[in-house]
Image 1 (cartoon, helix red, strand yellow):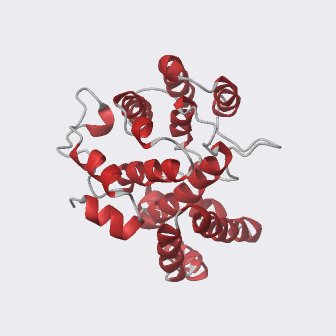
Image 2 (cartoon, rainbow, N blue to C red):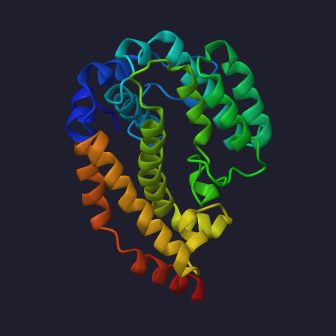
Length: 253
């Protein structure tokens, strides 16, 4: 599916110039994340999250010219290349993190935040640390958090870093939960990580998921009301109790 700048505007509230910049960007060469891709932003969450997140950052005080600069886009692509290497089994989680942190050094303008990320990401499994706003209770939802390294290049007194982090988790909770729901049966067969499977026999973790969804909507109402309405509508169509019940029925058969 091909997205246009108008699709991004109407569906997710993305600024037209931001959408156009991403839609028209050339596919980077020798980048595993875009391997065999012919367009920069295909209609898959792993790609269209980028203009949505860029739009959020501008709403939160980052300069649009900086967010759309070649330097910033290049940093994003470096991070995603190593994320793809990890997903393809070409490196371990810690090797992925080491490479991203090393290559991000020339771009960094917020060293304290980079050090905070280093402590969080350089765990064998990315787990939420006590007293930190990084991570969720579900490692499967934290698998994309290396992209937060891209925020270390943003230096602007008006930029609300803490709300940007909250916005990241609001967006990822929504997109990755939908991804896990769509991959549920395949993940059961293959024994893959899946946040829905993680919570199936734990009422407390199920309540945590529901709370995280509501928090995503609340955060987005502050940052991007169009996206908040989309999340609210989409999640209202999903019955988690029925999904958990279907998991057990599938296993019984």
